[in-house]
Image: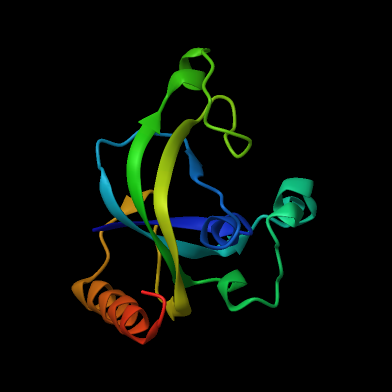
Length: 146
């Protein structure tokens, strides 16, 4: 399992708002489970974006926190078409000139887990992975719809 730190409100929109693309400066060969960590930085200009507002941005939501893991996803694909001047169909969240890390199966955690992040793709400590796994397993067991 790997993790990536994302500024708020972008991390929130991945966890709650259906953002299935993470715009990155570099590609990655990694595919698989990915923890979404809300970094200690906030993109204040983005908070007023119509796209962010339409995704339900609410700074009072626990998933709007900073410095914590707030979701899990599966990194399924990386689209680099716009980096080379091409076009793609990665949707409204994709930015031209970046690698689009396409996320699937995004699951918000029941509560944020405070953790230190890092730039780029990083490997979470085993204790963090265990905490996330236990939380997700417990939540699934308590959910009557599953």
